[in-house]
Amino acid sequence: MKVYGIPNCNTVKKAITWLTDNGFSYEFHDFKKNGITEDKLKQWCDLFGWETVLNKKGTTWRKLSPEAQSSVIDQDSAIAVMIANTSAIKRPVIEVDGKPVLISFNEEAYSATLK
Image (cartoon, rainbow, N blue to C red):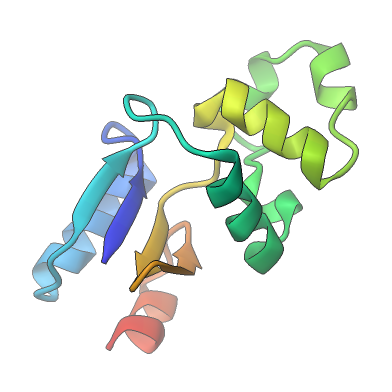
């Protein structure tokens, strides 16, 4: 299992606590430090939808210029913004055996999907 996110994010912390408390081992990928590939973002967007993967509720999105925000009109433009601003990616993303299975944190969804 691989957890993608940034360590100081409260939602990531909740997910990691849940995984640890429920006996799951995982590898953590800090995309603030290690970046994220366009192919990986495309895979997530294809599964979850770019509107879900791009976190428009976060501080990073709100700090973008109106021009940058209005330039996001489709998956390709959303991916470009997320590569340039990794904190604009909804997090965490959980992968099992290289396949994305969960995004963000919801205890019921984690229980249903991972147990």
